[in-house]
Image (cartoon, rainbow, N blue to C red; front, side, top):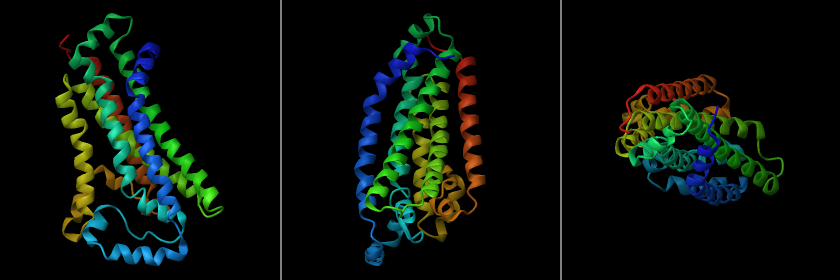
Length: 266
């Protein structure tokens, strides 16, 4: 059971952030897709070789293989898709519970016929639905643009798998942020964990890509579970998908329990 008034309030509070992130993604995705040209791939690879290899690797750019899917997987899903939706997940997860407690509006919410679990379930539902919608928009626009610019070039099933992996990744990251929001009473601590961990994970992933000396850091970041290369090549991605799903389920379930049981400074 959900609280419809709270759901509407969450939409009003966060729709601008959602639109901004979608707009930025829709600015980059068409540019990257339009850059695809099999005849100039070698020139693009040569240009990348002129850049510091550590920087190229850290940004997730590199040769995955031939074809439009590989091109998009490298230049959009290698870094941009890991950063921009993360900003949305951090902001909205913090606003979902911790911000209400910090500002004192949680006392008003609990004075209405809404239990703690109902409030938490509503906010969790909002997070899951909007993150799903965000990735769905990227998926649909990517397929539509590719079909218009390069008819028959895109491996649609592979592209859908790629976006399924992104979605599971963001379920897990959003779950972590939501847990921090449910566990802490103020936005400072909520953001320290809910934003600090995802950012740290991304930084560790970037550093781990720079060379063999730092490759061991990949075992300390959740982003390792999302590998565009493995998904595109059909290699060892099912276990990663399952791991991300488990992390997401545990994070959201723990969030509901933590908010239901803890003391609130009301």
